[in-house]
Image (cartoon, rainbow, N blue to C red):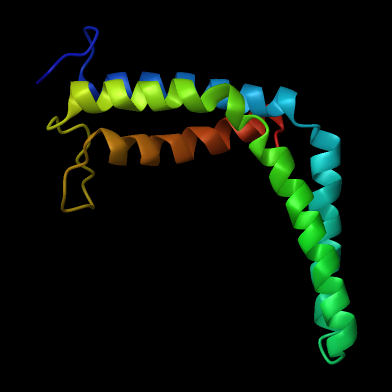
Length: 140
């Protein structure tokens, strides 16, 4: 078993994912106005309900879809803003990770017939920890 910084592969990946997802979540919390984002999501939800109600009127539906598209663009701009802070360090980390952990089995789930390397384990662990940190820090 290969050791990275004195840790086994799964321990190293878990620690790395915790640190990375926590940093990304904190950056998102403080670079995106959470109240505005919450309002945009609520508006989007209302508009979807209204869209279902007017599905028989094509002219109104088209106008409504245009408003929804504008709302989606605002939401997307806000969610992409924090990426400029963490994208380059993340690319550098994955480049280093690929060079360090290629060929090392990190995770072999009991219900999954295949082993997972660094990328598969990163995806699984980051989904779990990202959801957890978003709930704890109340990030939309």
